[in-house]
Length: 243
Length: 243
Image (cartoon, rainbow over all chains, first blue to last red):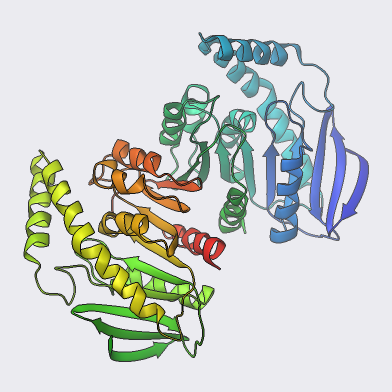
Protein backbone atom coordinates (compact mmCIF):
# COMPACT_ATOMS: atom_id res chain seq x y z
CA UNK A 1 0.00 0.00 0.00
CA UNK A 2 1.60 3.23 -1.19
CA UNK A 3 0.34 6.64 -0.10
CA UNK A 4 0.49 9.12 -2.96
CA UNK A 5 -0.69 12.28 -1.22
CA UNK A 6 -2.02 13.55 2.05
CA UNK A 7 -4.12 16.64 2.74
CA UNK A 8 -6.31 17.75 5.58
CA UNK A 9 -9.11 20.21 6.20
CA UNK A 10 -11.76 20.65 8.87
CA UNK A 11 -10.16 18.01 11.08
CA UNK A 12 -10.34 15.35 8.34
CA UNK A 13 -7.19 13.72 6.93
CA UNK A 14 -7.47 12.56 3.30
CA UNK A 15 -4.88 10.10 2.01
CA UNK A 16 -4.80 8.95 -1.60
CA UNK A 17 -3.27 5.51 -2.00
CA UNK A 18 -2.50 2.78 -4.50
CA UNK A 19 -2.91 -0.85 -3.46
CA UNK A 20 -1.48 -2.96 -6.26
CA UNK A 21 -3.12 -1.20 -9.20
CA UNK A 22 -6.23 -0.14 -7.28
CA UNK A 23 -6.40 3.59 -6.52
CA UNK A 24 -8.16 4.50 -3.32
CA UNK A 25 -8.76 7.22 -0.78
CA UNK A 26 -8.81 6.98 2.99
CA UNK A 27 -10.42 9.58 5.25
CA UNK A 28 -9.71 9.59 9.00
CA UNK A 29 -9.93 12.07 11.86
CA UNK A 30 -6.81 14.25 11.82
CA UNK A 31 -4.45 13.00 14.52
CA UNK A 32 -6.43 9.76 14.98
CA UNK A 33 -4.68 6.89 16.70
CA UNK A 34 -6.09 3.46 17.45
CA UNK A 35 -8.90 1.29 16.11
CA UNK A 36 -12.24 2.65 14.98
CA UNK A 37 -15.19 1.63 12.82
CA UNK A 38 -14.47 1.69 9.09
CA UNK A 39 -16.97 2.53 6.36
CA UNK A 40 -16.29 1.12 2.89
CA UNK A 41 -17.99 3.28 0.27
CA UNK A 42 -18.81 2.09 -3.23
CA UNK A 43 -19.46 4.79 -5.83
CA UNK A 44 -22.14 4.78 -8.52
CA UNK A 45 -21.70 3.99 -12.20
CA UNK A 46 -19.86 6.76 -14.05
CA UNK A 47 -18.67 8.26 -10.75
CA UNK A 48 -15.42 7.63 -8.93
CA UNK A 49 -13.98 7.38 -5.42
CA UNK A 50 -14.01 11.17 -5.02
CA UNK A 51 -17.47 11.99 -6.39
CA UNK A 52 -18.67 15.05 -4.50
CA UNK A 53 -21.55 13.20 -2.83
CA UNK A 54 -19.11 10.52 -1.66
CA UNK A 55 -16.63 13.05 -0.29
CA UNK A 56 -19.23 15.03 1.65
CA UNK A 57 -20.75 11.89 3.19
CA UNK A 58 -17.31 10.47 4.01
CA UNK A 59 -16.27 13.69 5.72
CA UNK A 60 -19.38 13.57 7.90
CA UNK A 61 -18.66 9.96 8.94
CA UNK A 62 -15.22 11.10 10.02
CA UNK A 63 -16.06 14.44 11.59
CA UNK A 64 -19.31 13.46 13.34
CA UNK A 65 -18.74 9.78 14.15
CA UNK A 66 -14.95 9.49 14.37
CA UNK A 67 -15.01 6.68 11.78
CA UNK A 68 -12.45 5.90 9.08
CA UNK A 69 -13.79 5.78 5.50
CA UNK A 70 -12.24 4.09 2.47
CA UNK A 71 -13.30 4.28 -1.18
CA UNK A 72 -11.70 2.84 -4.30
CA UNK A 73 -12.31 3.33 -7.99
CA UNK A 74 -14.31 0.53 -9.59
CA UNK A 75 -12.79 -1.05 -12.73
CA UNK A 76 -13.06 1.28 -15.75
CA UNK A 77 -13.77 4.21 -13.41
CA UNK A 78 -11.80 7.17 -12.02
CA UNK A 79 -8.04 6.69 -12.23
CA UNK A 80 -8.23 3.07 -13.38
CA UNK A 81 -7.62 1.92 -16.93
CA UNK A 82 -10.36 0.47 -19.09
CA UNK A 83 -11.37 -3.03 -17.96
CA UNK A 84 -12.49 -4.68 -21.20
CA UNK A 85 -15.10 -7.04 -19.78
CA UNK A 86 -16.52 -4.51 -17.28
CA UNK A 87 -16.89 -1.93 -20.03
CA UNK A 88 -18.43 -4.37 -22.47
CA UNK A 89 -21.07 -5.40 -19.97
CA UNK A 90 -21.79 -1.82 -18.86
CA UNK A 91 -22.11 -0.56 -22.43
CA UNK A 92 -24.42 -3.39 -23.50
CA UNK A 93 -26.44 -3.01 -20.30
CA UNK A 94 -27.07 0.68 -20.97
CA UNK A 95 -28.02 -0.04 -24.57
CA UNK A 96 -30.49 -2.78 -23.62
CA UNK A 97 -31.93 -0.67 -20.77
CA UNK A 98 -32.86 1.96 -23.36
CA UNK A 99 -33.94 -0.45 -26.10
CA UNK A 100 -35.66 -2.90 -23.77
CA UNK A 101 -34.81 -6.56 -23.79
CA UNK A 102 -32.84 -9.30 -22.13
CA UNK A 103 -30.69 -8.00 -19.32
CA UNK A 104 -30.40 -11.42 -17.68
CA UNK A 105 -27.30 -12.74 -19.56
CA UNK A 106 -25.42 -9.49 -18.86
CA UNK A 107 -26.41 -9.63 -15.20
CA UNK A 108 -25.05 -13.17 -14.94
CA UNK A 109 -21.77 -12.08 -16.54
CA UNK A 110 -21.51 -9.08 -14.25
CA UNK A 111 -22.27 -11.05 -11.09
CA UNK A 112 -19.49 -13.48 -12.03
CA UNK A 113 -17.05 -10.62 -12.59
CA UNK A 114 -17.92 -9.06 -9.25
CA UNK A 115 -17.45 -12.31 -7.36
CA UNK A 116 -14.27 -13.25 -9.22
CA UNK A 117 -12.48 -9.88 -9.17
CA UNK A 118 -14.17 -7.02 -7.35
CA UNK A 119 -15.11 -8.68 -4.05
CA UNK A 120 -11.58 -10.10 -3.53
CA UNK A 121 -10.16 -6.69 -4.44
CA UNK A 122 -12.33 -5.01 -1.79
CA UNK A 123 -11.29 -7.64 0.76
CA UNK A 124 -7.62 -6.90 0.04
CA UNK A 125 -8.36 -3.20 0.56
CA UNK A 126 -10.02 -3.90 3.92
CA UNK A 127 -7.05 -6.08 4.96
CA UNK A 128 -4.55 -3.35 4.11
CA UNK A 129 -6.48 -0.43 5.58
CA UNK A 130 -7.20 -2.25 8.84
CA UNK A 131 -3.45 -2.80 9.32
CA UNK A 132 -2.96 0.97 9.64
CA UNK A 133 -2.67 2.13 13.25
CA UNK A 134 -5.14 5.01 12.73
CA UNK A 135 -7.81 2.61 11.38
CA UNK A 136 -7.31 -0.71 13.16
CA UNK A 137 -9.66 -3.67 13.22
CA UNK A 138 -13.00 -2.21 14.32
CA UNK A 139 -16.35 -3.19 12.82
CA UNK A 140 -16.92 -2.40 9.14
CA UNK A 141 -19.94 -0.83 7.49
CA UNK A 142 -20.62 -0.75 3.76
CA UNK A 143 -22.35 2.13 1.97
CA UNK A 144 -23.21 1.96 -1.74
CA UNK A 145 -26.14 2.64 -4.02
CA UNK A 146 -26.73 1.83 -7.70
CA UNK A 147 -23.42 0.32 -8.95
CA UNK A 148 -22.23 0.60 -5.34
CA UNK A 149 -25.09 -1.71 -4.37
CA UNK A 150 -24.55 -4.14 -7.24
CA UNK A 151 -20.92 -4.55 -6.14
CA UNK A 152 -21.70 -4.16 -2.46
CA UNK A 153 -24.36 -6.83 -2.01
CA UNK A 154 -22.00 -9.74 -2.88
CA UNK A 155 -19.26 -8.09 -0.79
CA UNK A 156 -21.50 -7.71 2.25
CA UNK A 157 -22.72 -11.30 1.80
CA UNK A 158 -19.16 -12.66 1.61
CA UNK A 159 -17.37 -10.53 4.19
CA UNK A 160 -17.98 -11.22 7.88
CA UNK A 161 -16.23 -8.00 8.91
CA UNK A 162 -19.17 -6.02 7.50
CA UNK A 163 -21.69 -5.58 10.31
CA UNK A 164 -24.20 -3.20 8.70
CA UNK A 165 -24.89 -1.83 5.24
CA UNK A 166 -26.70 1.02 3.53
CA UNK A 167 -27.62 -0.15 0.04
CA UNK A 168 -30.16 0.86 -2.59
CA UNK A 169 -31.12 1.91 -6.11
CA UNK A 170 -30.81 -1.64 -7.37
CA UNK A 171 -33.32 -4.38 -8.08
CA UNK A 172 -33.96 -8.03 -7.35
CA UNK A 173 -32.93 -9.26 -10.79
CA UNK A 174 -29.39 -8.00 -10.18
CA UNK A 175 -28.90 -8.38 -6.44
CA UNK A 176 -31.47 -10.75 -4.89
CA UNK A 177 -29.21 -13.78 -4.85
CA UNK A 178 -26.59 -11.94 -2.79
CA UNK A 179 -29.25 -10.26 -0.66
CA UNK A 180 -30.59 -13.64 0.39
CA UNK A 181 -27.19 -14.33 1.98
CA UNK A 182 -27.05 -11.01 3.87
CA UNK A 183 -28.06 -11.16 7.53
CA UNK A 184 -26.61 -7.93 8.94
CA UNK A 185 -28.82 -4.83 9.45
CA UNK A 186 -29.57 -3.10 6.16
CA UNK A 187 -30.95 0.35 5.39
CA UNK A 188 -32.23 0.17 1.83
CA UNK A 189 -32.85 3.27 -0.30
CA UNK A 190 -35.52 3.30 -2.99
CA UNK A 191 -36.35 6.14 -5.36
CA UNK A 192 -40.09 5.88 -5.92
CA UNK A 193 -39.87 7.13 -9.52
CA UNK A 194 -36.54 5.49 -10.40
CA UNK A 195 -36.19 5.47 -14.19
CA UNK A 196 -33.52 2.74 -14.07
CA UNK A 197 -34.94 0.35 -11.48
CA UNK A 198 -38.64 -0.60 -11.67
CA UNK A 199 -40.43 -0.12 -8.34
CA UNK A 200 -41.43 -3.79 -8.14
CA UNK A 201 -37.76 -4.77 -8.60
CA UNK A 202 -36.71 -2.46 -5.75
CA UNK A 203 -39.38 -3.78 -3.41
CA UNK A 204 -38.53 -7.37 -4.32
CA UNK A 205 -34.87 -6.75 -3.50
CA UNK A 206 -35.82 -5.35 -0.08
CA UNK A 207 -37.91 -8.48 0.40
CA UNK A 208 -34.91 -10.67 -0.48
CA UNK A 209 -32.56 -9.54 2.29
CA UNK A 210 -32.32 -12.26 4.93
CA UNK A 211 -31.57 -9.65 7.61
CA UNK A 212 -33.82 -9.59 10.68
CA UNK A 213 -33.32 -5.84 10.86
CA UNK A 214 -33.85 -4.20 7.51
CA UNK A 215 -35.51 -0.89 6.85
CA UNK A 216 -36.67 0.51 3.54
CA UNK A 217 -36.59 4.25 2.92
CA UNK A 218 -38.46 5.29 -0.21
CA UNK A 219 -38.63 8.84 -1.50
CA UNK A 220 -40.18 10.47 -4.56
CA UNK A 221 -37.95 11.30 -7.50
CA UNK A 222 -35.63 9.71 -10.00
CA UNK A 223 -32.53 7.52 -9.69
CA UNK A 224 -30.16 10.34 -8.79
CA UNK A 225 -32.51 12.30 -6.53
CA UNK A 226 -32.07 10.74 -3.08
CA UNK A 227 -33.00 13.59 -0.69
CA UNK A 228 -30.36 15.13 1.53
CA UNK A 229 -32.12 14.14 4.75
CA UNK A 230 -31.23 10.49 4.08
CA UNK A 231 -27.65 11.44 4.94
CA UNK A 232 -28.73 12.09 8.55
CA UNK A 233 -30.41 8.72 8.65
CA UNK A 234 -27.33 6.99 7.21
CA UNK A 235 -25.09 8.56 9.85
CA UNK A 236 -27.38 7.46 12.66
CA UNK A 237 -27.79 3.97 11.20
CA UNK A 238 -24.05 3.34 11.19
CA UNK A 239 -23.56 5.06 14.55
CA UNK A 240 -26.19 2.71 16.00
CA UNK A 241 -24.66 -0.44 14.58
CA UNK A 242 -20.93 0.23 14.58
CA UNK A 243 -20.15 2.66 17.38
CA UNK B 1 -61.05 23.69 29.20
CA UNK B 2 -60.81 22.30 32.71
CA UNK B 3 -57.60 20.86 34.10
CA UNK B 4 -58.26 17.81 36.24
CA UNK B 5 -54.76 16.99 37.45
CA UNK B 6 -51.16 18.01 37.05
CA UNK B 7 -48.01 15.98 37.68
CA UNK B 8 -44.42 16.30 36.61
CA UNK B 9 -41.35 14.11 36.28
CA UNK B 10 -38.06 14.34 34.45
CA UNK B 11 -38.71 17.96 33.50
CA UNK B 12 -42.03 17.13 31.81
CA UNK B 13 -45.35 18.56 33.03
CA UNK B 14 -48.39 16.35 32.39
CA UNK B 15 -51.84 17.96 32.63
CA UNK B 16 -55.04 15.96 32.26
CA UNK B 17 -57.93 18.04 30.97
CA UNK B 18 -61.54 17.91 29.87
CA UNK B 19 -62.64 20.03 26.93
CA UNK B 20 -66.40 19.76 26.74
CA UNK B 21 -66.75 16.00 27.14
CA UNK B 22 -63.42 15.18 25.48
CA UNK B 23 -60.73 13.99 27.92
CA UNK B 24 -57.19 14.85 26.95
CA UNK B 25 -53.64 15.13 28.16
CA UNK B 26 -51.12 17.88 27.56
CA UNK B 27 -47.39 17.44 28.02
CA UNK B 28 -45.09 20.49 28.12
CA UNK B 29 -41.60 21.30 29.41
CA UNK B 30 -41.81 22.01 33.14
CA UNK B 31 -41.69 25.77 33.63
CA UNK B 32 -42.29 26.46 29.93
CA UNK B 33 -43.47 29.89 28.96
CA UNK B 34 -44.24 31.20 25.49
CA UNK B 35 -45.09 29.65 22.13
CA UNK B 36 -43.63 26.42 20.85
CA UNK B 37 -44.36 23.71 18.26
CA UNK B 38 -47.26 21.45 19.21
CA UNK B 39 -47.58 17.76 18.33
CA UNK B 40 -51.09 16.31 18.19
CA UNK B 41 -50.94 12.56 18.79
CA UNK B 42 -53.69 10.16 17.74
CA UNK B 43 -53.70 6.76 19.46
CA UNK B 44 -54.36 3.39 17.84
CA UNK B 45 -57.58 1.38 18.01
CA UNK B 46 -58.17 -0.15 21.43
CA UNK B 47 -55.56 2.16 22.98
CA UNK B 48 -56.10 5.53 24.62
CA UNK B 49 -54.43 8.91 25.09
CA UNK B 50 -52.05 7.49 27.69
CA UNK B 51 -50.98 4.25 25.98
CA UNK B 52 -47.41 3.59 27.08
CA UNK B 53 -45.98 3.99 23.56
CA UNK B 54 -47.75 7.35 23.30
CA UNK B 55 -46.50 8.57 26.66
CA UNK B 56 -42.89 7.64 26.01
CA UNK B 57 -42.87 9.29 22.57
CA UNK B 58 -44.64 12.38 23.92
CA UNK B 59 -42.13 12.74 26.73
CA UNK B 60 -39.27 12.63 24.23
CA UNK B 61 -40.88 15.37 22.08
CA UNK B 62 -41.04 17.51 25.20
CA UNK B 63 -37.70 16.69 26.78
CA UNK B 64 -35.56 16.57 23.61
CA UNK B 65 -37.30 19.10 21.34
CA UNK B 66 -39.02 21.47 23.78
CA UNK B 67 -42.36 20.85 22.05
CA UNK B 68 -45.83 20.66 23.59
CA UNK B 69 -47.80 17.46 22.94
CA UNK B 70 -51.54 16.91 23.17
CA UNK B 71 -53.51 13.67 22.95
CA UNK B 72 -57.21 12.97 23.40
CA UNK B 73 -59.23 9.80 23.71
CA UNK B 74 -61.02 8.82 20.50
CA UNK B 75 -64.76 8.12 20.80
CA UNK B 76 -65.47 4.80 22.57
CA UNK B 77 -61.87 4.78 23.88
CA UNK B 78 -60.15 5.53 27.19
CA UNK B 79 -62.24 7.65 29.53
CA UNK B 80 -64.98 8.33 26.97
CA UNK B 81 -68.38 6.68 26.97
CA UNK B 82 -69.46 4.30 24.26
CA UNK B 83 -70.16 6.08 20.97
CA UNK B 84 -72.85 3.91 19.38
CA UNK B 85 -71.98 4.52 15.72
CA UNK B 86 -68.21 4.38 16.24
CA UNK B 87 -68.51 1.09 18.09
CA UNK B 88 -70.89 -0.42 15.54
CA UNK B 89 -68.51 0.38 12.68
CA UNK B 90 -65.43 -0.82 14.58
CA UNK B 91 -67.09 -4.09 15.62
CA UNK B 92 -68.37 -4.86 12.13
CA UNK B 93 -65.00 -3.87 10.61
CA UNK B 94 -63.14 -6.33 12.84
CA UNK B 95 -65.64 -9.09 12.04
CA UNK B 96 -65.38 -8.57 8.29
CA UNK B 97 -61.58 -8.26 8.44
CA UNK B 98 -61.51 -11.77 9.92
CA UNK B 99 -64.28 -13.23 7.77
CA UNK B 100 -63.24 -11.44 4.59
CA UNK B 101 -65.69 -9.37 2.62
CA UNK B 102 -66.92 -5.89 1.91
CA UNK B 103 -65.19 -3.29 4.01
CA UNK B 104 -66.10 -0.45 1.64
CA UNK B 105 -69.51 0.52 3.11
CA UNK B 106 -68.05 0.58 6.62
CA UNK B 107 -65.15 2.70 5.44
CA UNK B 108 -67.56 5.20 3.89
CA UNK B 109 -69.53 5.38 7.13
CA UNK B 110 -66.37 5.83 9.18
CA UNK B 111 -64.94 8.52 6.92
CA UNK B 112 -68.19 10.44 7.28
CA UNK B 113 -68.09 10.13 11.07
CA UNK B 114 -64.48 11.32 11.18
CA UNK B 115 -65.20 14.37 9.03
CA UNK B 116 -68.46 15.20 10.83
CA UNK B 117 -67.34 14.74 14.44
CA UNK B 118 -63.72 13.83 15.06
CA UNK B 119 -61.93 16.38 12.88
CA UNK B 120 -63.93 19.33 14.32
CA UNK B 121 -63.29 17.94 17.81
CA UNK B 122 -59.54 17.89 17.17
CA UNK B 123 -59.70 21.43 15.78
CA UNK B 124 -61.44 22.60 18.97
CA UNK B 125 -58.69 20.92 20.99
CA UNK B 126 -55.97 22.70 18.98
CA UNK B 127 -57.81 26.04 19.43
CA UNK B 128 -58.01 25.58 23.20
CA UNK B 129 -54.49 24.28 23.73
CA UNK B 130 -52.90 26.98 21.60
CA UNK B 131 -54.56 29.64 23.80
CA UNK B 132 -52.46 28.47 26.75
CA UNK B 133 -49.44 30.67 27.39
CA UNK B 134 -47.08 27.68 27.72
CA UNK B 135 -48.15 26.31 24.31
CA UNK B 136 -48.98 29.32 22.15
CA UNK B 137 -49.53 29.39 18.39
CA UNK B 138 -46.45 27.69 16.96
CA UNK B 139 -46.51 25.22 14.07
CA UNK B 140 -48.40 21.95 14.61
CA UNK B 141 -47.31 18.43 13.76
CA UNK B 142 -49.56 15.37 13.72
CA UNK B 143 -48.44 11.88 14.72
CA UNK B 144 -50.72 8.87 14.38
CA UNK B 145 -50.62 5.33 13.04
CA UNK B 146 -53.38 2.78 12.47
CA UNK B 147 -56.60 4.37 13.86
CA UNK B 148 -54.44 7.43 14.51
CA UNK B 149 -53.77 7.59 10.76
CA UNK B 150 -57.37 6.93 9.75
CA UNK B 151 -58.46 9.87 11.90
CA UNK B 152 -55.30 11.88 11.24
CA UNK B 153 -55.29 11.92 7.44
CA UNK B 154 -58.58 13.90 7.16
CA UNK B 155 -57.44 16.15 10.02
CA UNK B 156 -54.09 16.91 8.38
CA UNK B 157 -55.85 17.51 5.05
CA UNK B 158 -58.35 19.93 6.63
CA UNK B 159 -56.17 21.79 9.11
CA UNK B 160 -53.72 24.39 7.81
CA UNK B 161 -51.99 24.65 11.20
CA UNK B 162 -50.54 21.15 10.66
CA UNK B 163 -47.20 21.57 8.88
CA UNK B 164 -45.85 18.00 8.97
CA UNK B 165 -47.20 14.54 9.80
CA UNK B 166 -46.01 11.08 10.71
CA UNK B 167 -48.67 8.62 9.60
CA UNK B 168 -48.81 4.93 8.83
CA UNK B 169 -50.26 1.45 9.26
CA UNK B 170 -53.23 2.30 7.11
CA UNK B 171 -54.13 1.63 3.49
CA UNK B 172 -55.36 3.41 0.40
CA UNK B 173 -58.90 2.09 0.63
CA UNK B 174 -59.38 3.92 3.94
CA UNK B 175 -57.20 7.00 3.62
CA UNK B 176 -56.26 7.72 -0.02
CA UNK B 177 -58.94 10.35 -0.57
CA UNK B 178 -57.67 12.42 2.36
CA UNK B 179 -54.04 11.72 1.44
CA UNK B 180 -54.59 13.22 -1.99
CA UNK B 181 -55.39 16.53 -0.25
CA UNK B 182 -52.29 16.47 1.97
CA UNK B 183 -49.36 18.57 0.77
CA UNK B 184 -47.22 18.94 3.92
CA UNK B 185 -44.15 16.71 4.49
CA UNK B 186 -45.15 13.18 5.53
CA UNK B 187 -43.14 10.35 7.06
CA UNK B 188 -45.16 7.21 6.41
CA UNK B 189 -44.65 3.99 8.38
CA UNK B 190 -45.32 0.60 6.81
CA UNK B 191 -45.03 -2.78 8.49
CA UNK B 192 -43.89 -5.13 5.73
CA UNK B 193 -45.82 -8.11 7.14
CA UNK B 194 -48.84 -6.16 8.41
CA UNK B 195 -51.65 -8.64 9.04
CA UNK B 196 -54.28 -5.87 9.00
CA UNK B 197 -53.15 -3.77 6.04
CA UNK B 198 -52.15 -5.52 2.78
CA UNK B 199 -48.76 -4.35 1.51
CA UNK B 200 -50.19 -3.14 -1.79
CA UNK B 201 -52.71 -1.01 0.15
CA UNK B 202 -49.92 0.56 2.21
CA UNK B 203 -47.80 1.33 -0.84
CA UNK B 204 -50.82 2.75 -2.69
CA UNK B 205 -51.54 5.06 0.24
CA UNK B 206 -47.95 6.34 0.19
CA UNK B 207 -48.41 6.92 -3.52
CA UNK B 208 -51.58 8.91 -2.86
CA UNK B 209 -50.08 11.68 -0.70
CA UNK B 210 -49.86 14.88 -2.71
CA UNK B 211 -46.86 16.02 -0.64
CA UNK B 212 -43.68 16.93 -2.50
CA UNK B 213 -41.68 15.67 0.45
CA UNK B 214 -42.88 12.27 1.57
CA UNK B 215 -40.75 9.43 2.82
CA UNK B 216 -41.78 5.82 3.34
CA UNK B 217 -40.18 3.78 6.10
CA UNK B 218 -40.95 0.06 5.85
CA UNK B 219 -39.81 -2.51 8.39
CA UNK B 220 -40.35 -6.25 8.76
CA UNK B 221 -42.96 -7.46 11.21
CA UNK B 222 -46.63 -7.25 12.00
CA UNK B 223 -49.02 -4.35 12.58
CA UNK B 224 -47.89 -3.66 16.15
CA UNK B 225 -44.18 -4.23 15.63
CA UNK B 226 -42.81 -0.84 14.48
CA UNK B 227 -39.16 -0.94 15.59
CA UNK B 228 -37.91 1.40 18.29
CA UNK B 229 -35.41 3.15 16.02
CA UNK B 230 -38.31 4.78 14.14
CA UNK B 231 -38.79 6.94 17.23
CA UNK B 232 -35.43 8.61 16.55
CA UNK B 233 -36.47 9.25 12.98
CA UNK B 234 -39.82 10.69 14.08
CA UNK B 235 -38.11 13.10 16.48
CA UNK B 236 -35.73 14.32 13.80
CA UNK B 237 -38.50 14.60 11.21
CA UNK B 238 -40.54 16.94 13.39
CA UNK B 239 -37.46 18.82 14.60
CA UNK B 240 -36.56 19.45 10.94
CA UNK B 241 -40.01 20.68 9.95
CA UNK B 242 -41.34 22.44 13.05
CA UNK B 243 -38.39 23.78 15.01
